[in-house]
Image 1: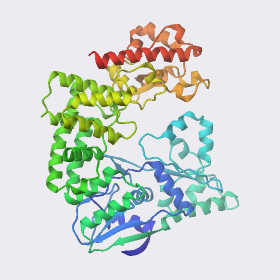
Image 2 (image 1 turned 180 degrees about the vertical axis):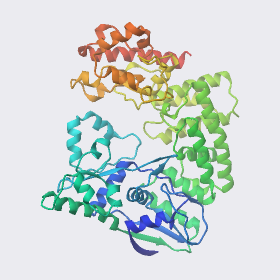
Image 3 (image 1 turned 120 degrees about the horizontal axis):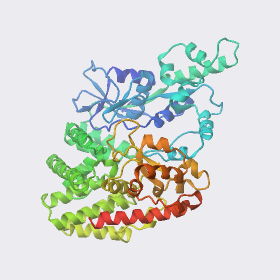
Image 4 (image 1 turned 60 degrees about the horizontal axis):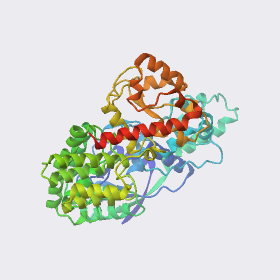
Length: 562
């Protein structure tokens, strides 16, 4: 294995010219803007940033596109990037000012640099892999002053319109695209050399540009290696330290045996997204494995033959199509947002295929009940979700399928019914909140002013669906913990315009206005108790208890009596 070095600027240029390409085995670009921020912060400090792994080869192998624009490579020899895609794509986007392609849409990565950052740089790194950021929730609970003070201690931040206007915050991309500091010094109010800030800002802007001269160590694999060997190296490198998820590594092994299959996977993923189900490609890879092996884990995927993989994919596509149709037509679940886990897609696909897509009335009723309970209670969202999924796949395989799956639920949760205490302390991310929306929509719930039916499809910022704190956060002040304030029993579904109109009003006051104009039914459709005795701040916990009882009763009716 050869060793070499290249600066960030050189590597970005190689990507732009098409000299560095991505092999099909690579996953898509997945970094959030905060990860890009932290990378820039590390390079600015001169911290180590890992090595780059390349394979230089004359072999023609399937490729996938970078998430930034590339020219066609003029060379017959390819440099394929095996490790470093997220870092180099991010740096290429920021330095070149290129928008980045993320899941069928383009967006810029805008990072700002603080000319007034403290001399002793603050620690800002976020260890965050999930889509829903806990730090965002914490930030929401902080006051505006606290957030501003925290930001002013940082060196790099993800851009906001307010910060962009601040004189000492400058666009990282604009700095890289300019050879002069005049524009940024003027913006900061520095007009002559005698200004004590001149030298400090000038030095810091130079240090920022020096990121482009940071040298990455490159490990370059020999040309003599086969694509299969390189895939094995890719899997081993990315298994250490869990840089990639199991689905990413499994896809690398699958594409090594089944060349150009990625195009089929992504095309099907795109079809499902257009239907409202926006899942990671790993969900469909897991479905393939489940159909090919009878279980959901990726451990044996490297032992599957090409024929087995291709048949597994064909079966998985049919199964997933059935699952999507069942969700939309039988349960009115028309968006992945309403599922507490993508694994339900796999269970439904396997169940449908097991019965040749012909169910009896009893099977369909029990399957509906199982899905609604499992989704509401978070069957695949607690503990080892793969183990739970394999338990259900095992029940289907053994022939006691739906009864076995219901027994699995009872063992996990003790009962199938939903009790008021199940709702206590739950947030908007829970399956119970998703089920609340489904039930309220089924009951004909409407916005409290426009009378638009609650829906994900409303267009325009005024009419987009939001969840509203019935007792507004500001109204509750600091008498209650954030967990109590954000409890799902304090949330209702209304449009953005109505949410802003209500703002921080006393519920007793704005309820009276709504009832006078629309009648009490519009509130009762969302299980909201309207008696005055529940609407004072002193009765807030009583309001939550009462609404939990009403909601749980309605959810049980919906699941078990429909």
